[in-house]
Image (cartoon, rainbow, N blue to C red):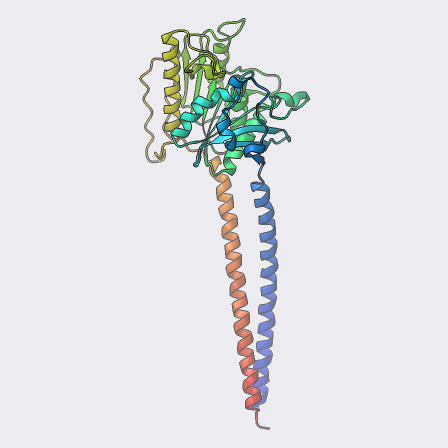
Length: 386
């Protein structure tokens, strides 16, 4: 009788062990598949578009010396690929989780943004400047893709993203600003937008339509007489973009004069630096300094640590504008910017839970096996009496 009961316990233990091992194998398969697909998704998400850095990045040596990017910045050079495979050359300056993309005007070189970029770096921001496609030393596109500068802006934002930037303000001049407007809805980290002297119409891209989707604070600026052969045309273009922008916190700044793009904010120390026209009057010089000040204030306001959910004070601006404006709030949240991090956290939690379940089942299996082994040893030492 005792032997029969003992044998029943052995059979029951064997059945329980097989059941546990079956569940262990099942959870192991689920864990491996989940980890495999998560790893693929993570690899695709984090696949770097940077293909070169430092001295190996092609330089703008084809330009006259005054137009070249300073040699001391060569260590910060970066080469990266766009969505359609065009290699772009530029520079990433500064560090931190708050970054700015600076898109130059057509016909202006990447150096045109450098004075303002240096001021942004001094404020603690990470900045990327680059030469657009079909501008040496960047690569070239053909056909309709020649004008797809918006893809270049998106790639520049991804470079910042790969370097840990979590909040982005995108700025652009002239056609670089048009491209920035088109790219803006595709930048999930976007917190603000700056458009300087940008045309509203283009055959390949539609900035007005893109701006109709923009809810983050936006800053527009243009000169009254800007436009070769048609003075004032850029004012009408920028005003059209301003009207198309759906943000309730947008502002337009109009200044007297003919300055275009980064020339509106740069005061060179002399007239030979190659990235801006030299101001001809003291008023022109002061106008540039004032606009530069406003852009820095705009950037600092957007990147401030004030939480819009608890407080949303508006930024006061004392300057008089020749056109109407809406004040922008200090912080604007963008729910879309958190979607990527939330999905990543969910995947991480699932993986952790699967690991815990797997470890738990393995622990129970080992414990059950040891319990069975003790029964067998006990049986050998104390065989049941016949």
